[in-house]
Image (tube, rainbow, N blue to C red; front, side, top):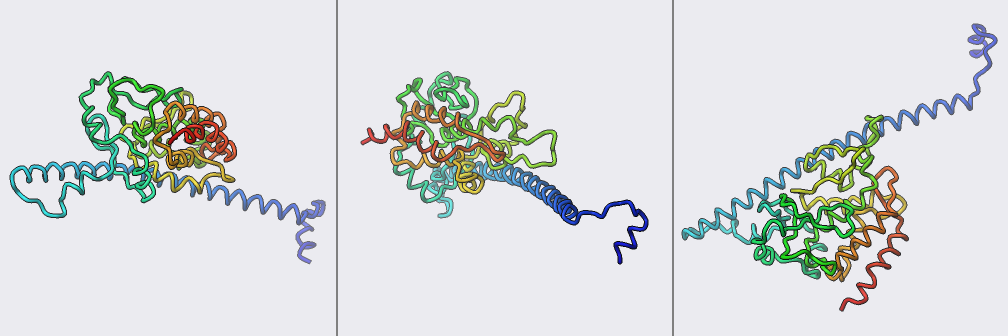
Amino acid sequence: MGDRIFRIFNPREPKADPVEKRRAQLRRAQQSYRDRKDKYTKALEAELARVRKNEAGLVSEVQQLRAKVHILTTLLSQNGISSPPEFTNEEVSHSPTLHLDDGSLASEQTQPATRAQAQNDWPLESSSKSANQSSVPSSDVFSLRHHGSRYFKRLRDPVPTATITLSAEPSHKTHLSELDATTVGMEFVLTLERPCLGHVHGNPKKPNEPGGHALTATVQLQSALSLPPIDPQDPKPPSYQNAPAVVLDRLLNLAPSVSEDGDVTPIQAWHYIRHQPHFGGFEIQNLNRLAEKLLVAMKCHGFGAAIQPNIFESTVREILNPVMLMSP
């Protein structure tokens, strides 16, 4: 009855196909859902960037306050004044931090129990050793900041950044136990994220769509340090000068939820290598060879670089397993 009433105004118009009409409704609903999801994801990425920036500022402020408290308690002790029990030197001096070559403290690193146990198993360069070598001239101070270079070559520029102070140019036989694990890990991860540098901020022609790389170390560093956006025409990894060491630990907990079909992200790759029993015995040359091979197989599916688990496992066995077998 109703159809006949309305059809008299255009009797030649064919009756609408109910199936096609339903498909059109579904397409509109799906498009509306995608638009809302993109706006929501974009807002989450912006909020995450803001939180990371605030967190880095708070961590830096806490470290400065800890350093001042340490100085004040030392002065009190030198003048024969006892300090309250809650202001002990142990509380300040035992805080795990990432030291910079300009003497400042980058951040406090909250370490999980497994990481703390791992540090006991893998001897890293002690703070006393670094202190004894602090008199090395600036021309002999090397920094692991050649992203993607063949041997993570160290720059001789005396810039204030996370550095490994050595008395001479390290040879290819340098073991990871002689280097700072956080610095090497940051370099390793940023190297494997290079395939994403050209599009890490999303499509500039679609500013309302999310970038999809908010959980990568590259974007996390930019957010925490308020770095300028990466130029797609000349993509270069961000500098991790003054980078909070806690960034890697944060990403270790987030990486499994963003990898597709069990693919291995750069953070997960470093996490696996870092927790090998013979981590300290690996040579920097072998780590570079591993990074080079993994970089070739790294693919980005819109949410950061990742590698298939079978390729990752076979590459690790090929390069690192011989070293593990030769280790005592």
